[in-house]
Length: 256
Image (cartoon, rainbow, N blue to C red; front, side, top):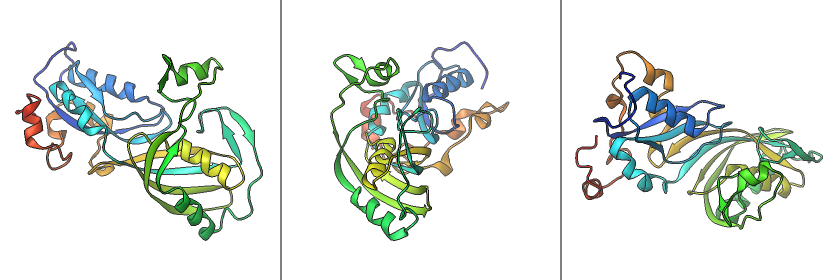
């Protein structure tokens, strides 16, 4: 697509982007705006800068469908590192506490028992560095100023936690969770449960609803000369389970 002045185009669709590390989700949105020349662009579920993987991006009038996608369950691959806690609950934060490593961290059965205990419906306290408002304050902005916000536990559901590998200082896991679940909070709470401290060292989103990371495209792919981004649009019914009648109701009968 040409690099026209951003505004309104005839583009309308949803693409799956493989977000690289050290970019914010908003950075990806801005990149898509530059690639397409379309000003109406939005994502459907924030990934932290340290995280990589699947980010669904709505373009043009298709942004009206974002609320139908944000509620989808999501899947991740993650690494939980034990022995230290950070202020952000991930590897980008400053270490605020350390603790000894339990001797049984590499015990597969022990790891499976702990993960099973964190499966199901539960109340979860979000990280201090989260884009959550309380009393008009955004938690992560207050945290950056050294001001703690008393965040209330939220109802979430962890559908599955599968162990990939357990070693003496970290676990690699796969997680399938409901909207609003923080994998950073899971890492923090698992660390405390095993009698240590922990933080999230790696995170990759691998699915959102029925869309998998294999369907995602890098920004470099989308920037290629002669690339028509329409060729990368997802099928609303097949890939995203958006009923045709809802598409029509939102005035998007011609969305790809």
